[in-house]
Image (cartoon, rainbow, N blue to C red; front, side, top):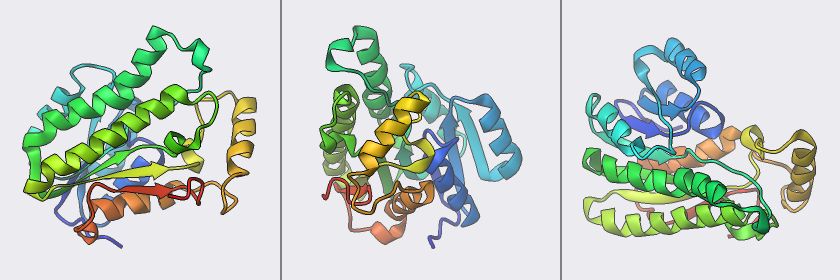
Length: 246
């Protein structure tokens, strides 16, 4: 559907789920991707499969050097036509169970990392490029046990709106993808019994009556990364089957 021929797109957290699907679609349409992940085996397999069309980087988003590592890699391959800041961690905790360590883990990966990453990458963004930030429908659901995760995603959504304003003079667009229940990564951090219960509860509130696929979420990210969305910036685009009705 989209033409990424001769374009270079960076996607964090792209060894599985919607990030991986988008990376594969970009390669299939003639583009090149830089992807990050924490699994060396998955990164190795993807490099073996796609060769020169993909650059793989093991990158820990919790590290203060996450942005520097990305910038050093990008510098070797040319300026970026697009960035999808997709890597994140999700967990459920009752509000009275949250400790300093838990708070730091979630906020470091979901908020500090993309902020540091974009700061480090700013000089490698082409004018007219596009940035996509992954948020979550949890920001708007008000579901019990999601306070910390929802707060982290709300924070990065707010940052993305400010980035859209700051980068507009360079005609760089910044938009936020707001996934609801997506099959491939849907509450995968939960024990199986709790996962099934939570899925049943959430999907019961989705007007379309099902979870989405990774491809359905990736389709929207690809649209936002493509030239077809050239007059869209500062927007939040839900991919949630109508869950939050925004």
